[in-house]
Structure formats: structure tokens, C-alpha cells
Image (cartoon, rainbow, N blue to C red; front, side, top):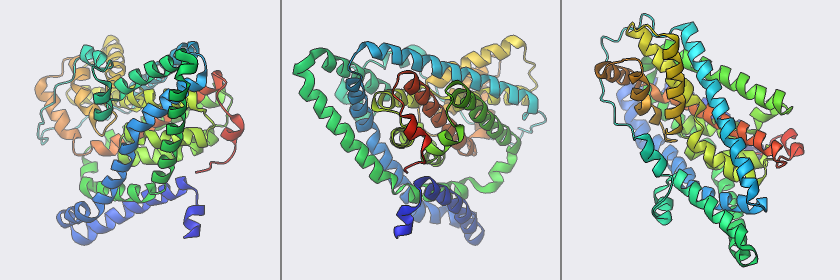
Length: 423
């Protein structure tokens, strides 16, 4: 088994992803759709679910310990304001570009033109959480409860306050700071252990998705799926390419190779929150991003930076307008872009969460409740296929912004960035 551990983890994950698709197709052809689904859910799916549980297990302790330790490593609470401002502005900027790309691609390819929605079974859209409630939820009434519930924004808020308080306390707070420093190192070590089982988890997740979704489901809205993938690829290459290669003057291929593990896990789990431990490991080990930035920018990005989701919602809005024959004005486009960017911030980092924010975007140009239900019925069976791709782009965006902030804050080891990946 020595060859297995000598092989780069990203290559093992990539091979597992391809093998999972092939295995899913083989099982489906051999057993038939119904029996294949039962087989996968009984024997293969639990392996993937175990992997997801392992990485979810790490989310709360990783955010809590690395964020506090990262603030401690800054040495000066004033630096937090500079870092935070750059982070928020960059996240807003990449989301704006994602909106522009999504609306441009959707307008050019027109995936909804001629779409037949007559046979679609309507599904009821869930109620979206009011924006003010999402804002208030950032402040935890009980920090322990927030940790237990995995409320990421509330954990970030409390961790920042705790880190700043430890720094401000001085000598008396040093033992507490040392405790978090040691704890973050221990949690990162556990993260590396979990990453070694990633290929097996990815294989099981992708194989199960291939069987359960089925190729037939993809054919019904293949044009929409294709346009979404095209838009996501364009955004990843152009937007992050400009940021990393032109603005930061760093090798772009090296950037993408450095985050391959995180992208592969994001693609298989469809959850940027679940991928966070792997993203942080890739950022620190492969990209040379130091703890003060990796421990603060990436957890925040996994919660509020949803470039792929914003792009996806924009394309879905145009798909609906084209399918239902609704003429859009320039102002409609502006409102769609603004609304998609805004609601994407509130999207939970879990599979298909953005679908239930779609109603807010569609409401802006008069799509009826009945038409919204038809859209949801069309998308639910195949959303996972698109969710996998947009989650990968979300993770790329988090890593690109973290790289930029790290370089501008003097927290990027460029020698590590430019050397081959360790994992």
C-alpha cells in the first residue's frame, strides 16, 4: 500500500471521483435502476455519509480554535479591521462578477427558450428566512448553544470577540491564547487524518449520486445544466484568473493545483461548510496562507461567499423568464443581479440550500407562485448535479480571496505557494 500514500491526495481523490461515476453507471446497467438504488443506499452510500460526518465533525472545533488562534497570531487587534474590510470588499467584488457572468451566459445561450414545462410536477417552495432575522442570528444568545448547533456566523462572531479580548487582556490572557494555539494544531492534525479517507468517501458519494440521479434525469434539462457549468467555468478561470495571475502576480495553475483536494471534496459533498476543514488544510499546506488569514477569511467565506450560488440564481431567473415568455428590461437585470447577490449571502453551506431562495429572485419580475412551484419541481431531481459544480466554485472563490488578503497583509509564504502541493 506504499504506492497509495505516495500518490498525491488530489490525484487519489480525482481517480476516486472518476471511478465512482464508472461504478455507478455499471451498477445501474447491471441491476436496473430500482435495484441499483437499493444496493447503493444499503452498501455504498453509508461510506460516503460516514466521510461527510467525519468532516462535519471538524467544522465547529476548526472554526473556533483556528479563528481565535489566528487573531492571537496577529498580535494587534487593529489589524483585524484592515483584514476584515479587505475580505468583505473582495467577497462582494467576486460575487458581483459572478452575477455579471451568469446573466451574460444566460442571455447568450438562452437555455429556457422552448423549454417544455408542461409535464413537470409542481413542488411547494419553502419560506425564506427574513434578512433581519439572519442578521440578528449572528449574535448568539448562548455561545455554547451556537457551538452545539453549528451556527457558523454566530461562532465566528463569538470567536472574534474572544480572540480580541484575549489579545487586549495581555499577560493574563496568554495561557488562554496558548491553549487555543495548541488546540488549533491538534484539530488540524485530525483534519489531515480525515483527508486520508477522502478518496473512499468521494467514491461512495459520487457513485450513489450517479445511480440515484440517473442519466435520464439529466437529459430533461441538459441545456440548463450545460449553461450553468459553462458559466461557472468562465467565472472560475476569468475572475479568479485575473485576481491571482494579474493582480497578485502569482502562478494560476499552481493556485488551482493547490486547492484540488478541496475542490474535489466540495464537488462530491455539495457543501462548502463540510469542505471547510479541507479548504483550510489546502490553504495553509499548499498555498502558504498563514493562520491569521486562513483561520478567519476561509470560515467567513464558507458562510457568506457564494459566487457559484449567485451565478446559478441569475441563470435560473433568466431560464424562468425565457421559459414562461416574460420580457425583461435592463432594470429587471439589475434587480435580479442585486437580489441574487444579496440572497446568496444568506444561503446555507449545505446541498441545494440555494433552491429555496429562488422564490425571492423570481418574485422581482412577476413569476407567479404556481410557476415557481413548477420551476422547483423541474430542478429538484437534478439540482445536485449543478450544486456540486457551484459549490466547487464557491470554494475556489474562498481560496482566491484568502490568497489575496494574505498577500496584501504580508501573511503569504510565496515559496510554499510556488512549490508542488504536499497533499
